[in-house]
Length: 144
Image (cartoon, rainbow, N blue to C red; front, side, top):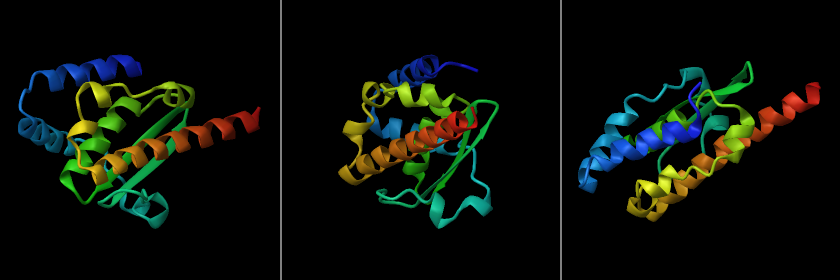
């Protein structure tokens, strides 16, 4: 399991290699093609993230102390954004997900180059991921 900081550093390095934000958007779109796709049975209203301009479904499962995420979106840029979040937080422990500040978002300039509605969507995605982490942590603590 690679730690969150190392994955964030890789992403920052990748985005530093591209100067123009149009090229960064294109890279984001390409990244969206690599997102672990959500199984059709999880494309439900319960997995739909509210607060996003486009439709985004996020599913999480918990096994062996780590959370696995899958997602989909009907917008290519949004799909790229969620793919970055999943890349950083997939197969991580709930405590690690809750502790991270996701500094890469600011360091690559993502939030400042998103429209206000997409920025709100990014915030909603992060919030939902952290809610999953809190729920799985609470469930694990209840078992003890």
